[in-house]
Image 1 (tube, rainbow, N blue to C red):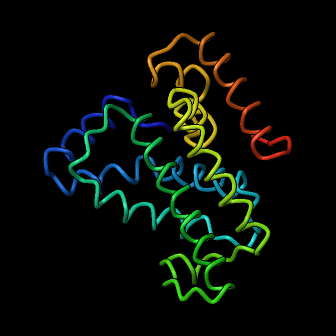
Image 2 (image 1 turned 90 degrees about the vertical axis):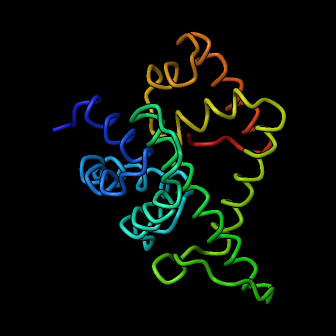
Length: 191
């Protein structure tokens, strides 16, 4: 059963106000959704089945704890941030993997023991991240819509609400963003 949105918002507010235990009460309410986000992340990144969803959720939780002074408007905003953190963790892991292969001496990220990404997958993850960063520089709104919709796991309606745009505008911007990303990566993307 989904927690009431007001319960989640109240706990987010308490956490932002310095109540560290509010996050401990919040995470169990959203844990299954966080696992789904992690699973989507791993699927979108075309990762190996040996990647560990639970490890990714737990590592994201540790990063979220560091953001305790962040102000989250609501459940959708919190989940979008959690998804963004998961993406950053995968990118960091992929970069560390590539650096280690080149002998770059980069320190392994904490996920290194729990996750395994092949060299082609590591390259694809870093290429996607670099393309998303270029899109953000060109059109922050399209980047935000793409992030919330596909990587934040929000529905079209939730995305429209989160970014403050009409559903029609979100659909149009999403089409452009996907087309740009496909052209940038030189292939059709499976978002």
